[in-house]
Amino acid sequence: MVDVLLGLQWGDEGKGKVVDFFAPRYDVIARFQGGPNAGHTLYVNGDKVVLHQIPSGIFHDGIINLIGNGVVLDPVTLKKECEKVAGFGVDVKKNLFISERTNVIVPTHRALDKASELSKGDDKIGSTLKGIGPAYMDKTGRNAIRVGDLLRKDFKEQYQKLRTKHIQMLGVYNFEEDIAAWEQEFFEAVDFLKTLNIVNGEYFINDLLKEGKKVLAEGAQGSMLDVDFGTFPFVTSSNTISAGVCTGLGIAPQHIGEVIGVTKAYCTRVGGGPFPTELFDATGEELRKIGHEFGATTGRPRRCGWIDLVALNYACILNGVTQIVMTKSDVLDSFTSLKVCTGYLVDGKETAKMPYQLNGVEVQPVYQEFKGWDRAVAACNAIEELPIAFQEYLKFITDYLKVEVRYISNGPGRDQIIYQAEQVTV
Ligand code: GDP
Ligand code: IMO
Ligand code: MG
Image 1 (tube, rainbow, N blue to C red):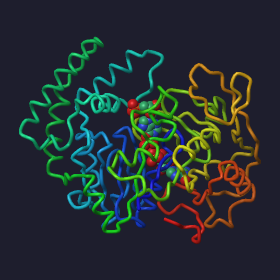
Image 2: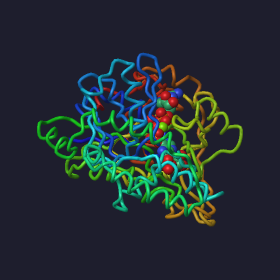
Image 3: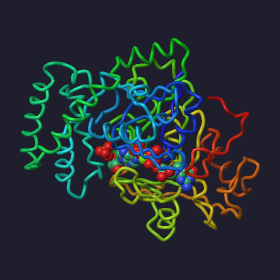
Image 4: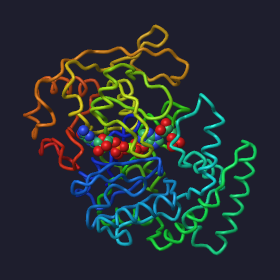
């Protein structure tokens, strides 16, 4: 079976930490979409590590980590990341595998990302500028270089062809970038990548499934950043929802088992685009400060607001979420009152459904207010110990979404997670 773990909001829900926690229950952890725009934070023996491309199971001995065909891979970031995890004693040659169909991010993709963002002016997406959009455009445009191509004799010619095309496109944007230094780094990193385990990802994973191995697919970004269903055009360029697992790994839908959705106890967004429950006041500032809400990849301050059940319900429907992990519950400990968004007022009419378009639409969140709690969730070690007010907050959310919140994360550490053993189904 393949279980899926993914973000239900606008990313940064704490997926890395939760995958690291679940990893011992699986044989394989696989990334199926996204690229180095992701920043997944984990703590290894007290040391903070941020992973961008390597799956978050890498620190567990004997677990296979697969970068699937649906990912866009930057060899330079990958090399740096491999060096970083090697510092923790991880042998990537043993437990990291890369699909030969994975698309490669080249230096000009990053330049094109910059050029495109600049050309948008005030409407910019707030991209991480890692070349994600241009790399996926080359995939659907049928121009991309894939990891398997790096091993071919004519790779350099293929690269030059793509480079020429990109330089012409940069000319249209009237954008110049000196990519010579990036290219040197790129080719060194390509040589390194060629020494790793490059496999036919779809046979690789299906053979493992046939042997009865358990796979956890690790999502990047979040459901509201999905290219089809997110707050378009302020989205990333891949399908972040559970449907992306099949195309991003080459597995059939009947293999999908549990879909584990991760949400913060509140909500954040980094980059541009609509965010109905965003707080622009001292409360928002407080959430940012207590939650250390700064991007793991870019360091940008994250926009903060209350939990949005309209968006969460939408994400539960799209993904077929079977269980929820709520993270950063401890961040709310010091608030005397909390709000939960239960509907949107769109042009004066209340709805609990996500409109197809949020840009240029006047959306006012409808809130239900809750009392804060008197005892720190951070200090709890069992469900029964959770403050009554927190349990009420949780019950309201569970009843609204009709999906159980099975795990409460109450701190960034690997073991700071509360659950009832009898509810464990993965
Ligand atoms: P991801 O992209 O979904 O993996 O999330 P990020 O790593 O970008 O951001 C989540 C941040 O919250 C990281 O700094 C984590 O260390 C931290 N974190 C995760 N879970 C918790 C939690 O339950 N409580 C607190 N206080 N921090 C958490
Ligand atoms: P993880 O996996 C939060 C956001 C960017 C921008 C938009 C498009 O750590 O949750 P892109 O680089 O794809 O062109 O950016 O998406 N974004 C993320 N926000 N977490 C992420 O990943 C993100 N990856 C992209 O800020 O608004
Ligand atoms: Mg992140």
